[in-house]
Length: 365
Image 1 (cartoon, one colour):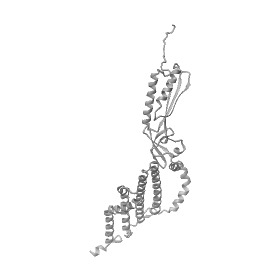
Image 2 (cartoon, rainbow, N blue to C red):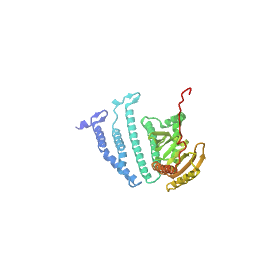
Image 3 (cartoon, rainbow, N blue to C red):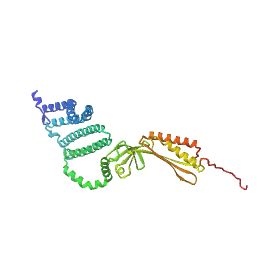
Image 4 (cartoon, rainbow, N blue to C red):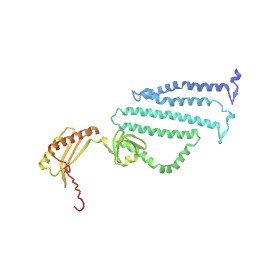
C-alpha cells in the first residue's frame, strides 16, 4: 500500500494527486459556506457605513462571483503543488502546453476577481441610491447610476490590461505605448463618442435635467428614463423610446417642462362684426368673472384687433404647475363657461352664418 502512494505517475506521486483532489473537492463542497462567511464579514463592514442595509441584497450580489473566485483560487494553489509532467509539455503553435494552462488559470482567476469587484460596485451603488432616495433631489439617483457605470468601465479596462499582462504575457507598458500611437486615429474614429462622453459629464455636473423630468428637445417631447455615458433615453408622448446623443442634449435648447412654475392656457376667439360694442363689453367683463378663480393666475382678456371679417379677442391665463390631466380639466371647464356666456349674449362666431349658394345655369339661358 505504501508503494502505491509513492508510485510516480506523470512526474508526481499518487498521494500528491490525492491531496490535490481532496483540496479541490473541499473547495467545491465548502464554497457556499466560505462565501457566505466572507460575505458576512464584508456586510458587517458595509453596515457601519449605513444602517438598515439589506443583508440578502448584498449576499445575493457577491455570492456567485465570490464562490467562483474561491474555487479557482484553491484549485490553482492546489494544482501548483504538482510538477507538470514533461510528457505533456509539448508545443502548440510554438507555445508550450504548460504555458497555455498557466495562462488560462491566471485569466480565469483575474476575471473572477474583477467580476467580484464589479458586483461590489453594484452594491455600493445600491447603497448610495438608497441614501439618495432619502433626499428629494432626483438628480442624486442618476448621479449614482452614472458613476456606477463609469467606474465599472474603468474596472473592465484595468481587468483587460491585467489579463493581457499576466494571462498573455504582454508588456502592459508596450500596450499603453501602442494605445498612445493609435490614440490619434482612435480619437478621430470615435470623435462623436468622446464628445458624447464629455457631454454626459456636463449634464451630470450642470444638472439641467434628471431622470423623470419631462423635456422638449429637437421637436421631441417626453420623459427622461435614463442618462447614460453616451446618450439619453426619452419616453415620448406617443410612448416610443427615443435615444438622443448627449452632445445634442448639451448643444440644443432643452425645455425642462418639469421645472416650470405655471401652465399657460390660450384661447383665441373670432366674433362676428355684427356684434355690438355693448355686448362686447359685457362679454369681456363676463370672461373676467369666469377667470376670477383661486386656481387661475394672471388672467388677460382684451379685444386684440378688428379684422376685415371678425373681432379678435385674446384670452390668456395661467394655472399652477398641475399635471396635464388636471390642467386639461380646468381648461375644459373655463372653455365651457365661456361658451355658455356666448350663448347667453347671443354672440356668434365669425363665419358661423355664412351661406353658400350654388346656381346651375344652363348654357344659353
